[in-house]
Length: 178
Image (cartoon, rainbow, N blue to C red; front, side):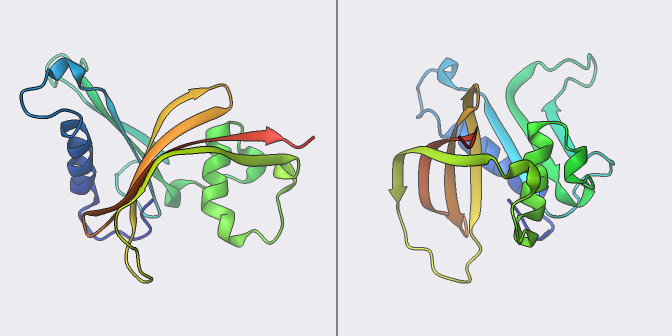
């Protein structure tokens, strides 16, 4: 998630996605081992000249308009363009975006979430490489690895000034209170 536009976000998006792709194998390993990389950015500013709050970017062949290079996808959520009330959020994605956008203003749990719980189910491969001190800008790169029903598995890395501070994998779910 990025709160402030410092002018180079699109380039940094390309950089971190290509870095994630490249780091999957060592020199002289088989390129067929490379897996697709999904970049998901949630930003509190406008990046693109469109009106949709979610935009998906692919590498497209200009001549054929086909996606021949399929190993990288970019999804951007621009919170400034998201203007829905909770009652208008008809998908889980819209409800999550609403929550992210409004969480700091909640002084009570919205009625729609009163009977829901978010469970962090597991944390795996967590490595804390360097200490993070107050007032530094922490950049999180998080990728949804897969989902099975209501359970999602994620992996993420935390950086300060392009230096990796931590990385981990985790799973979480939203369930009804019983």
